[in-house]
Amino acid sequence: MADDTPDSTTDDSTAPDKVKEVKEVTDDFAVRQHTTGSGLKYTSTTGRLVLRREETKDGKADGFKPKAEIFIVAYTKDTDPDDAGQANQRPVTFAFNGGPGSASIWLHLGLLGPRRVDSGDTGAMTPAPFGLVDNPETLLEHSDLVMIDPVNTGFSRVVEGEKSDEFHAFIEDRDLVAEVIRLWTTRNNRWLSPKYLVGESYGTLRAVAVAGRLFDAYGMAVNGLGLISTVLNMSTLRFFPGSDVPYALHLPTYAAIAHFHGRHPGRDLAEVVGEAEEFAAKDYGYALTQGSRLTAAEYDDVVARLAAITTLDEAFIRRTNLRWQYGEFATELLRADGLAVGRIDGRFKAQPANLQDSAMTDDPSIRAITGPYAAAMNHYVRAELGYENDLPYEVLTARVHPWSYKTFEGAPVDVSQTLERLLVHNPTLRVHVDYGYQDGATPHFAAEYVFAHMNLTDQMRARFTHHYHEAGHMMYLKPECRLAQLAALRDFVTHTS
Image (cartoon, rainbow, N blue to C red; front, side, top):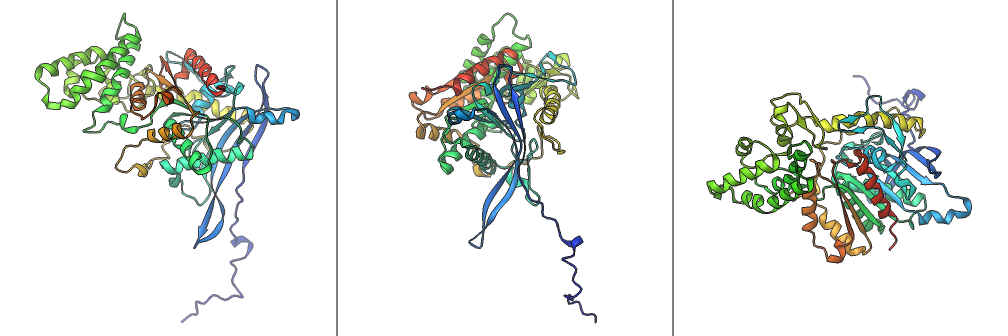
């Protein structure tokens, strides 16, 4: 029988071709100087920040190991050497989008950054190959900016040997984004700068959670939260059997979208939305709670009023028993014209792939805007920011799914109590809120519902500012909305009292 014992004299495991090369993981930033049209000189720092984690093994320290490479774009105002101390006086705004699975591209190139995509707006979209233009109203004029892409969005990835799934979860994502903010703030000596978090969509939920984590884990208090297209309690948006609240909270959005498409001729948007809000809060909400206890006359009255407010066919409303999801509305509103409306932005419309679909499967608003933003970002990051990476820039990816909400098992995904706590512990914290009337993803009435149910004093409520726009989820697609939004954000980050 052959001897299988390794012979040390012939062991070649340490030969050059057998040694696995260990690649050192380091930050890879490109730094460039720029000047805005107004003459503001600033520096862009673009690339991937390596996040490390202290680990232990058998109760002993086991090193500070790299876990993920997070893509950021930071814009900082250039400061004269004699005025170096003034850097701490300047606000810094950390921004991210949502999804989960969205890069920060939308806020970056649609609203906040010094350059913006030339996308056009519904009915007048810019044709390919699109382009970039200056953004004279950029928030950079008033605050430094740090745009953050969570794991598997943009160019952000885990390091070799780590699992992406670990970061595809509420808590892990929260902690990762908080660590990016802590690390950037520390390395750039900005602990004494006013700090703001701006999130959009799921990014609003993330912003509140991250602000809580920063305060609890590091003692870092932020000055303000910018909540754009807000969702703080997922149960207000998700349609589940036995949960009637989301049906009522979507009704004013249905009315606003119908109005945009000419279904309420001769009426002002405010009048249409106001009527829908009153009916949703009172008679419709009551009818939904009654179920089969409604009399035939009461049921018929609710059907007729829903048809008048939404302009949907009464037969459809009866078939759905007064309850339909947004995707069904999107396909039904303009079905007679062979069109479906968007979810992210109900002002957009397009022919669906299947005219017989009962619910929207492809959002025409996302399809319309992804091309311009993707083209602009892939050009901008290389040609103007000087950063090279052969990875695909993930704009809006499914790679983060399934997303884990295990923290909330058996309970709604809700961060409103975290915001309550922050407002108590930080008596100067302020909150800026932007709503889009034609936003089918995060309806304004649903966000208002959450704020109204928070346990806040009148003084706390006075620290909120609410801004409404006749547009969709990304209200900055509409030029006049973008200008109004940036003017309000300017006042928000430069607030001194």
